[in-house]
Length: 378
Image 1 (cartoon, one colour):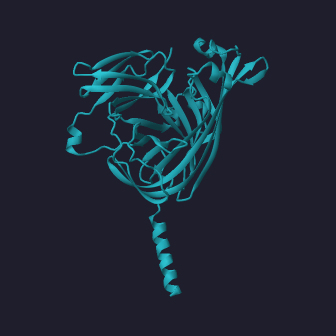
Image 2 (cartoon, rainbow, N blue to C red):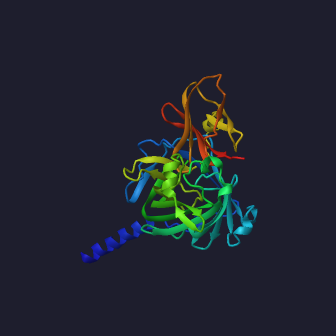
Image 3 (cartoon, rainbow, N blue to C red):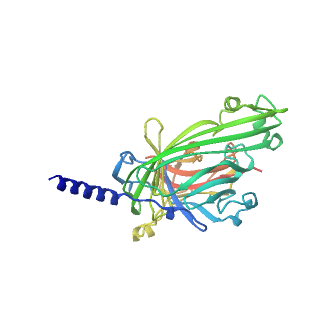
């Protein structure tokens, strides 16, 4: 009897272990990879990432945006600022933004950044990480833990800062320094099958929480003073300053380079706020032939004046929204659209320099189209 029970136990354990996926470095990005994703900023209540161990997730209801976000990776020598990052093997280039990565057999780490400053001060920076930021690691299996810290800082002469920013400060610094510290903690706590529009995948789920602390220091004479609280109170609309917590669930597989779905939730309630998911080409005849609603912007990058072009939009009430990289709405405007409404002119002078997401949302809060929007300043 004992022998039979013991044999049954080991058989069950063998099946359990075999069902679990192990993620290897096969999902690491490489030169010439293009990762294609879409974003659902209004996911339905059926999108629930909770549960542990073996699960089944049906995310087939994610809205199918017409525009696809593309992240392109190249050999380091393709980056205009590659000479500043001789230890990098890979560069990600999106518009005027370059991110440089160091690659080993078990991890990919962000070691440097060139482009629009991540805080939105309206300046171009080249910043090497004091501690690299973990991008991907392997191998990963159920109960694998992720614990990493990173930090980056850069100093800017006050003469480089726009007057519109300096005039809002109660002091006149010689220069400022931005310091960003990030801690990422998580565990692989579930696995199973996930269905998204266009495919079903065997995935491992990473339950991740990121803590970011962004401080601003001002140099007055020979001293650096922490003016973070002063900046926050003096410039209420500035983003990305102070402490922030981001909680998300990443579903990864060994057969695709894209994360199958990243589900961002409220830190306190776990309510799903947005989902970034792998873009799949649906090959059905109806999908190929049906005209899709789309919103595009010209020019892009844009300085101030922008023309929104609407295609294949049925008459009705809509809202054009612009989100920052954290998913917060920074600009929105409602419209009544009919057959004669195809071009809309707007002025985006109040937006800081940076990369945003531009979306068209209908009156049922369904996102019909999303694309990347870059704002530049002379």
